[in-house]
Image: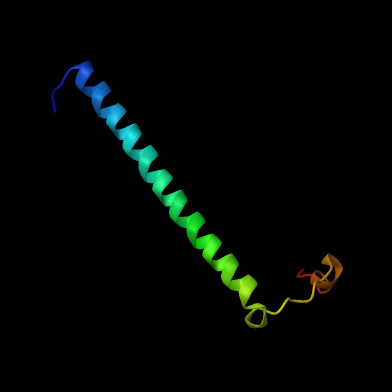
Length: 65
């Protein structure tokens, strides 16, 4: 793989922009999915009952030794 510094700089630049774009697309997709799930949970609260909150003392009641 031969090439000058200008070609390597071009590859690095193209790779950086491609990685930036793909990361942006992935973040947009996950944000959209999070929004859809949050809206579904908000519109259907009966399907998602709230769990009772436990204190740390209740969780660590019987420590493993």
